Image 1: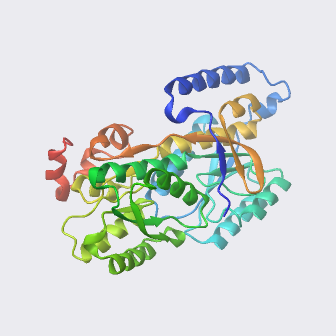
Image 2: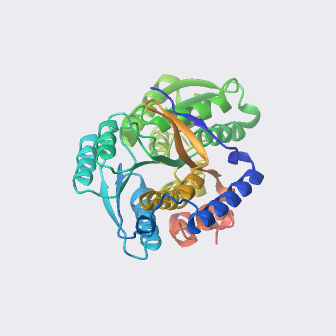
Image 3: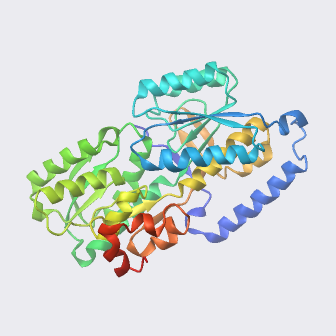
Length: 377
């Protein structure tokens, strides 16, 4: 699989450049509002009866139904003074179902499509059909192939770096030569290769990767089977840490370790900041997750979708400071949203501060005492 090539503008570790980007965005937005792009007609610029097609991949990942869809819907309404709407469909892990949903949106002539592709390669023909019909497509979260107009996601390599760094930090002086099991994401998902690349960049030459598994469709059931195989092959006591690419895989790995008789769970990583993962972190069962501000990602995607339909070219370019190459397209305008390591020490500053969860939601009865112990009260 070809790993998408990302050319970042430097926001990852530079607040100075972030501030500069924000200033540039303000200036370009003002230029657009002031009519800086004379090629755009006023009728197009102020059109608000816009239908945004939103195609999400599954219901197992909690964020999609709880945050991504509601955020896109709310932002589209806000940007169009309530005249715009979202045509939403969830593929429920079925590639063929997502294809049908995509084709329906094209036939019904939605104005723009946001798609989180289950299979970025197989969706390319549908993306081409949309372009032929004059409907722009914005790849959301995963980089779809075909002639897309833009890509909105998180810095996926940095996700892996945060996960790998967390394992290194958790093991400390014991890291050198320690046995680590890797549960990577779906090999059909281009993000998986970037997560893995970032993690290996932090772990190579520090630990021994004794078993690696690519988990088809990000299935927790498959991950649990793979973890059980690793336990039998290596021995429960010989596993120092588990790299799990997301929280669903982390939960499956932890369940397998507990059922195998583990009294103390070794450090296990995750991603997505699912509520059950945050609770496992509170309880000391999962070492960390990666919080990807999905509300920011969804908000940016909705802005790009509306701006693209309205023809706000200057502002549209200002919202995509990065560039990505896919196997089928070069220099795709891209917005990469930064990520944050979520541990016991950062729960307040991340998911609580952003209103993703309340302390009451996290600190239910089984976790109340642990919450008090780490200052969540």
